[in-house]
Image 1 (tube, rainbow, N blue to C red):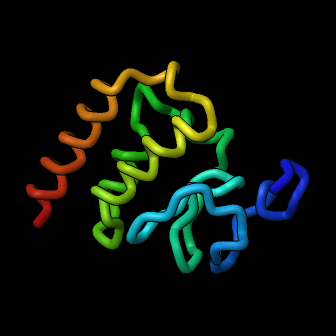
Image 2: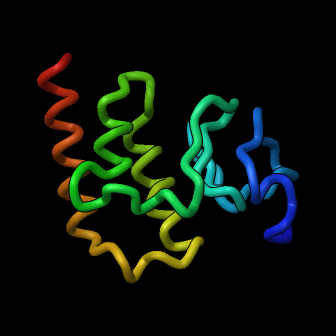
Length: 110
């Protein structure tokens, strides 16, 4: 799919295999657009993946949402970083640290 296609410029309301999916998990998919929740409702455009990464990353934000499959989101986030060419900008240790913080916070809230 080209960068000028609709899927690359806006999230799909309910994404399907022909909608530019690069990787599909249980609840999340990496698409030409960025990171999208299967069935719609939530998305992170590629150019926002690093938004507030050193303060409160998307992994930690999604960890605050009990309806989010955190394991699947974290995997999708890492796949998105690789597939969209950001992997050199974020050390794996930071992702692991944020995942562990989100898991601990979620456990305290349960």
